[in-house]
Image (cartoon, rainbow, N blue to C red; front, side, top):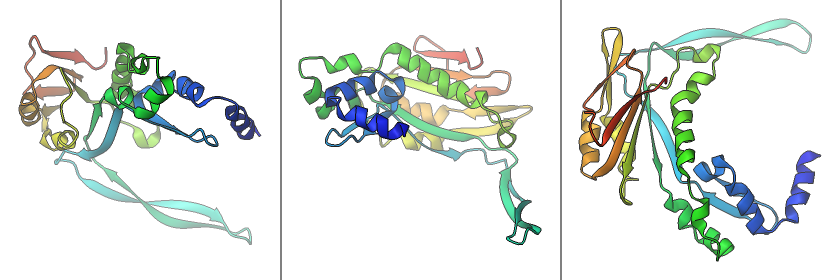
Length: 233
């Protein structure tokens, strides 16, 4: 089959070539990969790590609907079972992520493989980051289904630092500091507490992407270092 043919072909490829091919793909440069081909195993830790999301909208409520699940018995009789599905009136999930280019440039296995070739050639490029921003802000909007009606990318807060800072333990805590509440027909997204925490680490610049037609941002002041963009355009 196709998988077996691919495995046989990969056996004849040097580990360096496998790494070179993998890192030519943007999804590997962003999120990493694990490739197992006989003795040529390769594990690449991606610079971009996305963790779980939490709902910060306290004004919504959850409810359960009964659903029917039809099936046919061995005798051919039509029957149905009753199940349940959980829904919510409104939720706003906040996900945190961090992008650490050193995951590639300091990877000992990659440096050993490429030796004289600068590993920095395989680091994230500005266009990689641009594509990541586009995907994380608009990706949800591009896929629709009955159970996903109304789901949209609401806001992206992107913070860049001048030098490496130890933010990994901190980043997951920031999402608990973001509050979203009703404000008429819009939703107010309060970034005040999260930005106060981030300012202690001297960010180089901050960008906010959101839809002003549906959301209002609190605590973010546009200036030389802080930019705001329409998430749609």
